[in-house]
Image (cartoon, rainbow, N blue to C red; front, top):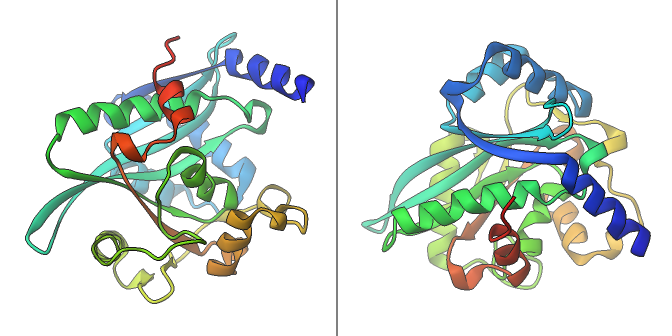
Amino acid sequence: MGNNQTTEVQKEKRLLGKLMNVSELSSEQKIKMLHLLKIYFDNVKEALFFKDLSEKEWVIIFEDIANGEIQGFSTQTLIDAEIDTISIKALFSGDTIIDKNYWGSRELPRVWGKLVSSLMKKFEGIKLYWFYISKGYMTYLLMPRYFHNFYPKYDSEIPEFEKKVLDTLASKKFGSGYDSKRGIVTIEFNYYLRMEVGQITEDLLKDPNIRFFKSRNPNYIKGEELACLVKLTEDNMQLIFKQIINDEK
């Protein structure tokens, strides 16, 4: 365990994340992002990638501290909606990938968490959510790792209002591609994780969260995605997440 912790610390020191407006990205940065995506996903369509990127507001870029090379990214945007005459906002996370040599770094939750904190302050008094779709168990695990309550969840039902929020956001974003009964998004020509990256093994199924993810999204390996929702409040954050957000680099 000690060796693993040391490795994680070493990896964390090598990676630095920064939040940018998508409009600030250079052509070279966009090409590097596309190349990184193709390493871990099959069926990536360049035109669709660039179109999706243009629809996002922010991107978190992760660079190797030593040489400045992009080793990961995560796209983000805000969605407005109204549920039962209540106005809500949702931070939607799109494509997210970090090179496997940097897995274990806390830069993603640190920089993303600071974005979340800034939005919570900016929109104080407005219901704020995190909305994303997950085609892999690793992205699904971000919810139980950093939040107390999230949906869907293996040991609790989604409240009625949050179900309306999730259905509204997913339908607004994906239209007929969202199946509200299954909570699954199917995107035409979607890319999917390479088998060696996202396959769920028997050993991984010992984790109830992973077991639940597979049961709710059995076609994950084909690119189908599970719609996920988290209410963004201070009380809903795990202590470890708060500590990571407050870490200054």
